[in-house]
Image (tube, rainbow over all chains, first blue to last red; front, side):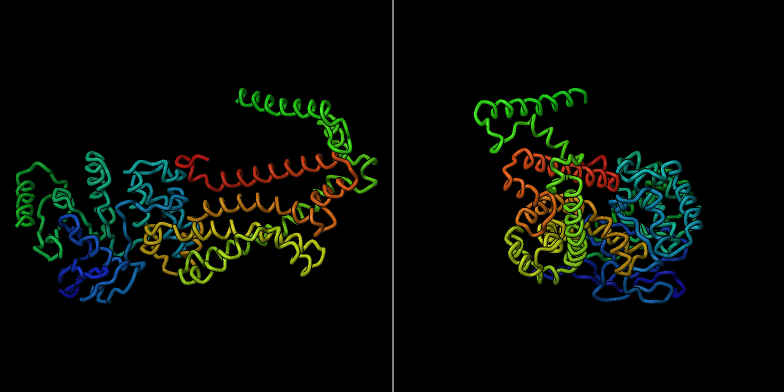
Length: 249
Length: 263
């Protein structure tokens, strides 16, 4: 239990407005193992993104704690990288420049950084677009850049906040398959926030199913399906139905 | 493109014809106004340094250099102060609140109104001219930079944080400054326009004994409207060139915006 990479311990969070104190996360606890692909699934507005932002260190929980390799998280750190829903690529940097960003901050030698950045651009399938600017790319390509930009930093954990929700259905399916391929190649630990049951089942080893606001952990669902997964197989559909009912109840 | 050129020449040509006609029908007095045909001759003589004018100190290249010297001195300090104060004020709400009343009080005072103080404080020197130019250019640069910095989207800051940019200096250098360059450039271009106007105003009032503006005033005393207008022409041309330079610089530097910004 205690040798988990990341331990989320009874995290509670309130949002304060003028006269109200709104509870968004109500005592969520679970562990994330090294190398695992875990999804946080819940209805829109349930606080799952907030939970991810707390793990990223962009927000602070009011109660509870999060331990990374046994150490409490108190802010953003180089051990975690995040991929955002709206990509958040730096528009003034090219694809290569975006991917180099984290390496520049880590003061990696120029030549080495360049090689590394290029290999990650290749990994996400964007060879030949190194000198393009974000506004010249499609949504799917931008998300590939964001992925390479985060992966190149070699974080312990990759945090992904509904990264594919802005894409059309077909591109999303392609990107899901790509994501699985990249995850298998890099063996990264990924925490993936989504509101799509299908996406969660397709991608994850385990799914942390959250309730409506305030978010409570309903169940940790194991997904024991062979990859690549068939969205239309009986087991896949059954699991989807099971999780659907879980959220509805 | 060819059509634009055509219209350009028609527009300028028509203006010159009307001006020429106006002179010969209504004025006919070279001490009051000069027709464009005279101005063009005088202008070229002033540019090449014809002794007719050069002997009494009218030589556009020299005056241009003096004016540009005032401009560079004043404008460079305006960039330095405007950019750094704008950066800090945009970054820190406290600094912004502290500076706001001060800026809003001083900003509406026309730069020309500072001329007496500049002369009293700095005497009739190049520094005095530069000071007026500084006053004129600093606010557009400062306010645009401040606006640019304070409106940097949160998502860029957060993305940088999660990529390891947790030091303020790194965040400023790698995110805040590049993200606010477009707004800074807007300030630069507006500021440059104001600065160039202030060059003329400052020299006109005799803050400095050299420069294009000063010579306009001198030529009026000599009752030479052809010289006055030639210097006006020089001021216009240089102002245009300066703006074109900043525009080209902006386009080069802001390549990344091409596609969603119409310049």
